Length: 210
Image (tube, rainbow, N blue to C red; front, side, top):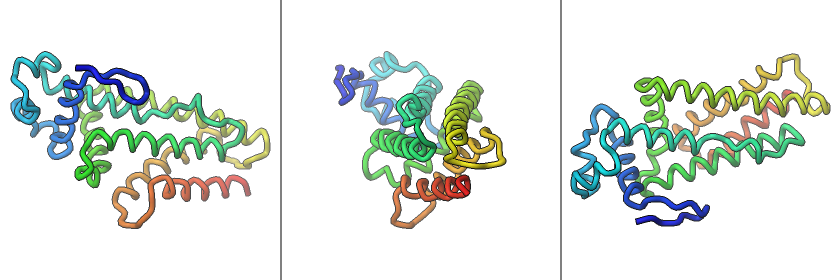
């Protein structure tokens, strides 16, 4: 059965059920500890019906990780490019939207541990399958180039001043994003991820303006 989701894209409901069920297992255990037999049993499907969609655990795991990486990629073409500040505000909103979309793949009761375990799934994928490391490095280079462009604009208009190169400043923002994410998922403070990241970016921006 195919269903239409809000953005107008049609998805296979059975395949989505398999992906969501498998994701919960991978969130609870490592890739190595989850078995195909367990996945099939959890879906409640017959082996024949299940294998119509996925023939191996590796194939299933790779599709889940690919979906994670694709969902997390920022759509820089839609960002405001008139100023660095407006650009990073759009970046924060983009990350927040991506996290919400990914967390919606699991039940509400599972979401509390989702962010941290999601990070571990990606780490395991990069270590186990070389193509994901290559994909991550390619995305990082795209991120760097997008940030370098807006930083060059900000420097040209006088919005910022810095002796650091455009690439060094771009790396600073991106590494800050990773660090804030790790700090956020281990924090018990009543603050949202966008607010956490915005505070960090504002500090960087303030120093660049002086």
